[in-house]
Length: 233
Image (cartoon, rainbow, N blue to C red; front, side, top):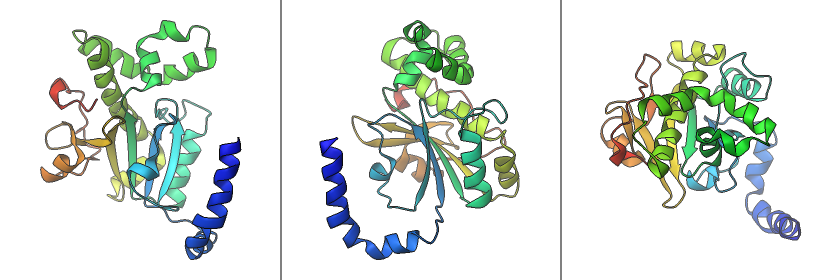
């Protein structure tokens, strides 16, 4: 707690004063361009690796960056998505997984959460990911299996996003773009699904081949990530 309190003092006395005009403007309202959905993992700091400031990202975090299908959960995910899309009018939604994800590890090894009923129940929201990995990547083990699961989970959550009426309506009007990303903690790299190559590439390369990580809602999302040499983790 001492570090937190000292940090607050430094922020108020140094950082806040340097950006006082910005914070005064933000006090009147927000207009973020992007809803950023990612994991609760303390090592993931979206504003740090995207180099964005206050007011630029509307952030939704939970264990495993999971987006339950519309109506499947009474949690805060659906209201957050609806508010971001219908009220704030974000133009982009990013689902960002990450290397070494503990939630995905637990999903692949459910025996490790036997005494954690809330976590076990929550991970049932990602059952599709577990089945896809078990049935389509049975030859993979260890880190390679986890890498693929992290990527597949992001794609499953993109598909779940499309079940939300607010998202579906804006997609239909061409006013919203979905992006599938994976952040590699140990290198700071971000990988994006290339719609053209249908696999994850370093974000710079995905942009170079004519995609920006954007995921169309016309079936472009596939689960063909068998080229594990492109895996981010």
